[in-house]
Every structure is written in structure tokens, then in C-alpha cells.
Image 1 (cartoon, helix red, strand yellow):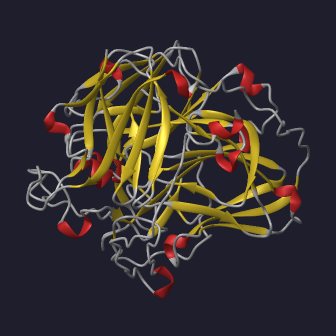
Image 2 (image 1 turned 90 degrees about the horizontal axis):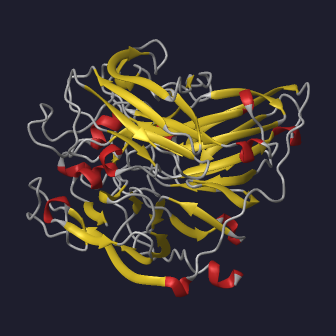
Length: 491
């Protein structure tokens, strides 16, 4: 049975050229070739700092009071580049937004007030949410308005995230700062002995570029937002030349010689990261988008495309105090190839944490129970045929405005055969995919699947949750805004 489990996710790709242009943002150190990402590099117009000088910020944590959390989306000025001010749009005026900590199985209500000058929509990415609260892209909260989202959270403990999902403008809105993590816990997970408290740290990784005033640079086709989309050069995706972790450029974190748990999120619009550590230090992956693995997997590389998450433990006791452990992105050179650094500054007063050999139980879906097999192809349409005046990215030739791409029946099991022309991280609202675990040992749940150029993936998808209309889309946010987002209904 184990052998057949691993066939559910097959990534096969051929080498394909990506439309990435090298750029320079203040010296040759910052030149990035973008070899692993679909898009074009937008060079910063302001000098960028040297790496590993800025301390890693930890976003504040918010927990529900009587089952409710209140958030305000607002514009604010923050220091990202040392000595300079950058204006952002942020939840509670910070980037990334506060880390929400909630409990699996306990209903959560989030009240969002929009104090920005733009329309916004809130989506809990990875949430199993009724359609009316899911953040459908045209369910807009206009400036000055507010609304409540109800999340039943009848799902596994997992590292989720929340972000803007406004129709046609998700890319610029998330780029401006409207994103944060939402970590679902459970008593079962808490009893495993994994690192917790100050040693359970969210790492929100993204790339950004800056204009001459140190503002986030984003190539809107129409800065007044009279029409959506980016300029033609960035039609394939916007790649920044400065890597931010928790909103800081190439930061450094002081750590004890002990185990730490890191919840890694790729919150970039288009950039992929293949994360590696030096000094012989490895990752022990304990979870993915959809929660804990069955068993931990020791890995030298953690690959995360846009919106993917990886739950990892790093044991810094394997190196001497004083060691600096650097996390890099092996897909890129220069600035985009650097991520952050850990400085092991002291012995741990105590560390009674562990990584157990058994983390969770995932019941294997039966391929023989599949009632529908769907072929879904993600590709660029004909030139000049698009909603935005350019070629539309689409799914099976269908875009958001063409009606449902399919209707699924609750209580059934489907097989999806996904294929692509170039890189596309594929995300379905409401539904989760059962796939082979990283490293090939056991099973995992995910909500985002990375398709390589010319590649394919086959996943099993239980149709569970709620009836209603949802969206399936590429999480390269420029592709999503340029129509690679389709509707499907669950009945």
C-alpha cells in the first residue's frame, strides 16, 4: 500500500526557460538571476543594507477573546530599511500582520475594519470555511466599512495564513503588506514535546523592491487603479531584489544552542525559495500546509513556492556557541540568494523538547473510491485576448468571468491531474490535497501544490466542508490577478 500512496503526487518537469531579467539594486552583490522563479526582477532604486545586520522581528501574537479577534487594515509608516521609512498597508498597521493563534475545532470570529483607501477582502488561506466567510474576491469591504468572518476551524492543527484577496488587486495589496500568519494548535500537538513558547517562531519570507523614496515599488499598469494589472514586463510575476523575513531585510536571530520550531511561510508574490542551512545544520520537517506529517523527515533543502508552508525544527546544539548559521536560497545568487542568519549566542539553560518518531496518523484515501477524475491545465492564453488587454493566464482556457470550471459533490473523492506551461503554485479554497510526504515516507495534507514548468501532479481531493462557490487559482499573485483564477461550486 505504501508504494501506491506515493503516486498521488508526481512532479515531473522539463527544463524550461523563465522570463526573468537580472537587475541591480546598489552593487553587484544584489544582482539576482531569478533562476527558480517565474517573473521579472524589479530592481530597487535605493541602496539596500548589508545582510545580517538587522535583528529578526517577531510579529506580536493575538489570541481570541470570547472567540473573537478584531483587526484593522490601515496605512502606516514603518522602518524596514535602516534609517528610512516605508509606507505600508498592514493589519494593525504592521507587516507582516499579527500572528493569530487559535485552536483547531474552536470557532473563531475575525472582525475586520477597513481603514485604508482601497477595497479589501480577507481570506484565511488553508481554512475550511463556509463560502460566505471564505473571502470570495468580489465580496469587498469598502473603505470605512467592516465585517465579521466566521471560521469554524473544523480541521487539523496547521500553520495557516491570512491575506487580502480583492478581485484583480490581490498582488499589489499583499505586496503592500496585507498578510500575516494564523497558527492553529491542538492539545494533541501540544503534547508531542516540540519546541514551544519563545522557541516556536513564525518566519514570513517575502521579496520586495524599493523606489527612490524607500517605498515598496510595484509596477501597476495604472497607478490610479482605474484598471487592474501590471506592466507588460511583469506579466509573469514581480520579483523583488530584497528578501524580507518578518518584514526585515536579511535579518539575524540570536538563538540558544537548543531546538527551535520555525513555521516557514513563503508570502512572496512570485518568488520560490529552496532554503538551505550551512555549518552542517539540517532541517527536521514535522509538518506542511495541512498540519503534521506522520513521521519527521530530516532534510537539507526545504522548497517553498508562493503560499506554501513548512513546519520545521532546527537543532542549534549541533554547533558550537558563537557559530553563525546562514539560511540561503539555492535557487538564486546575490541578494535574492540570501535569506537570514542565526547566531548561536549561548548554551541553553534547559531544553526538554523532542521530535517524536510518530507525529500524527493520516488515514490513506482509497484510490478505488475516486468518483471523478479532472484534468486541469494552467497556461497562458492567446495574445490580445485578455480581460486586462494582455493575454490571460487561465485554467483549461477558462477564466474567472466564464462561469464554473466544474461542480463537485460533497462526500465524494476526486482525482485531480494538474499540468502547467510554466511555474504555477496551485491553491484551491476549502479543499485539501492528500499527497506523498516530503522525503517519501508516509502521507501529508496540503492546500497548495507547486507545478514545475511543463510538469504535472496527481492528487486525491476529498470534497468535504461546505456547499457554495469557491475559487481555484495560481498563487503567483500576478497570474491570479491576470485571470488564472476560476470558480467551482460544491453542492
